[in-house]
Length: 390
Image 1 (cartoon, one colour):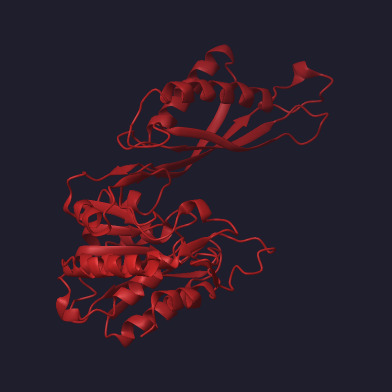
Image 2: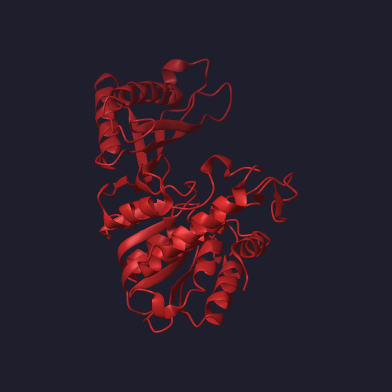
C-alpha cells in the first residue's frame, strides 16, 4: 500500500494553482479511493474564467455518498497559491532533515495524503456517516465549499477542516472580509484646483478616519487569539490618471479579520457612518463600497466531543488560528468544527513550504481514530514516532 509520504510526493508533482483546473488532483484521489471500494461523487462548476473545477464527495463502502447528512466530514481543499518561477523544486518534492518539501506540502496536500492513507482502514471498523470532501478554489475565497453549501450537497454534524496547525486542534478562527472602496472626485487641470475635487484627498481623509476606527475596534478583545482583536488593513490603493490632473477616482481595498462574535457587517456599517460624517463637511463626497467577501469568525466549545477527542489523541490542548478557512463557512451548519493538520502555516505560501514526515504518520493515526471512535490507532502512531526519535 502507498504510504502518506509517497501520496504526498505524487500530489506535489501535480500543479494545482487556483487558476488551473483541479481535475488531475481529483482524478488521483478518486483512483485511490475507488481502489478501496469507496464511493465518489463529483459536483463540478466553471470558475469566472470558464475553467472547470471539481468538488469531490467520497463515502466508505456501504455508505451512501448521495446522502447529504454526515456525522463526521473531513474537508480538504485541492488548490495551492501561485509559486515563484524561481522555485524550481515547487513540483519536485524532496525530503531533507525529516521534512518533505514542495508546493502544497503542508497547505494542504499533506492532509490529503493522510486522508487517502487513512482510507485504507477496514470499512467495517468505520462509524456511520463518514465523508471526505475535497474542494476547489479555497485559496481564492473558499468558492468550492460555498458551491457545495449552496447546492445543499452536504449537512455535516461534525467537521474537520484540513489546514496546517502542527497537529494541534484549532477550535476557533478569525473570519475574513474584503471590500473595495472607490472614492469619486472631479477631474480638472492641476493648475486650477477650484475647478475640480481630488478623489485622492477625499480617499486620504477616509483612510485616516478608518485608521482611527481600527484603533477603537482593537479595544474589543478575545484573549484566545494573537493578536486579540479584529485586524484591519488597507493593502492596495490606486488613483489618478496623471501628475497634472486632479484625480477623479481613487480605489483601495480594505480587509478585516473579525474575531468570533463580531458581525461581518460591523465594519461596513462603521465605514458608512464615517462617510456620513465626511459628507457633513463635504456635501459632494461620494464613494462606493463593494463587498467582495464576508466570512465571520468561528468558535467551537472547548468541551466539544470533537475537540476533546483530538486533544486526547495528540496530547496537545486546542488553539486558535488567525487566518480564515472553510471552517468559517461550515460553522453555521455543523454543531462542531475543528481545523487540524500536519505542518506549520509559517512555511506555507513560500518556497520554504514543507511538512514533517513524522507528523504525517501521527495525523494518519488521529484520522483513523476519529473515523472509528477508537483511540488505538492514534496511540500506536504516537508510539511509532517516539520510537523513531529515540
